[in-house]
Image (tube, rainbow, N blue to C red):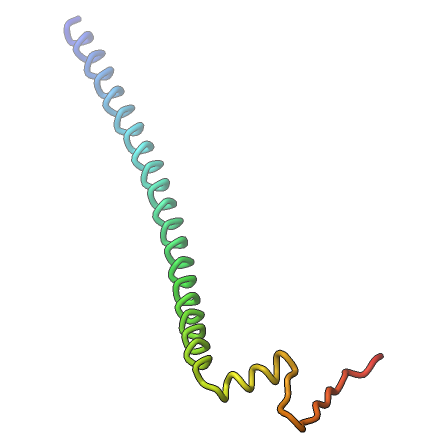
Length: 101
C-alpha cells in the first residue's frame, strides 16, 4: 500500500516535471521567435536608414558643388541663360518647340 502511494506521488511529480518542461520549452520557443522577429525588423530598419543616409550624403555633396559653382561667374551666366532665358546684348535666342501631334 505504501508502495502504491509512493508510486502515485512519483507519477504525479513526473507529470508535473514533464508539464513544466514542455511549458518552459514552448515559452522559450515563442520568446525566441519573437526576439528573432524583433531583431529582423530592427535590421531592416537599420538598412533602410543607412540607404537613406547614403542618399542624403550624395545629395549634400551635389548641393555643396552647386554652392561652389555659384561663386563662378561662368556658371552663373550659364544658369541665367538656361533657366531664365537671358542673353547678352546683341544675342538672339531661338527656342525650338516640340512638334504637336
